[in-house]
Image 1 (cartoon, rainbow, N blue to C red):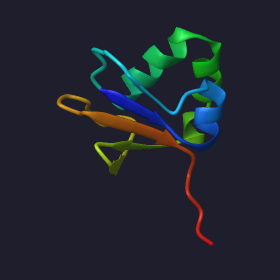
Image 2: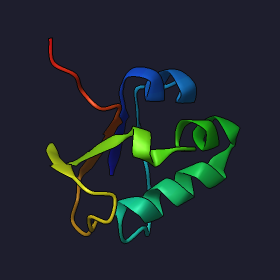
Image 3: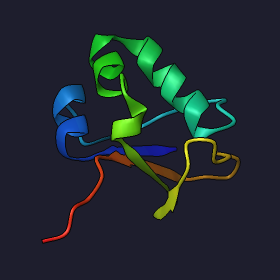
Length: 81
């Protein structure tokens, strides 16, 4: 699946997107796999309460299932202005 990183998440990880092969059942499972990769991922996902996620371009919760999903995006909360 395609995993996208935006704003400070991208800055901490160092890339805007990557193709990830995973057996994760939920977004939370994917986050755990990513955290375990290396420190830059662990730092980016240290506090998921500071993140939002979109699954196939729709806002989702971290317990959202990933079966059949093609894209997951991580980003900080958006503010208006």
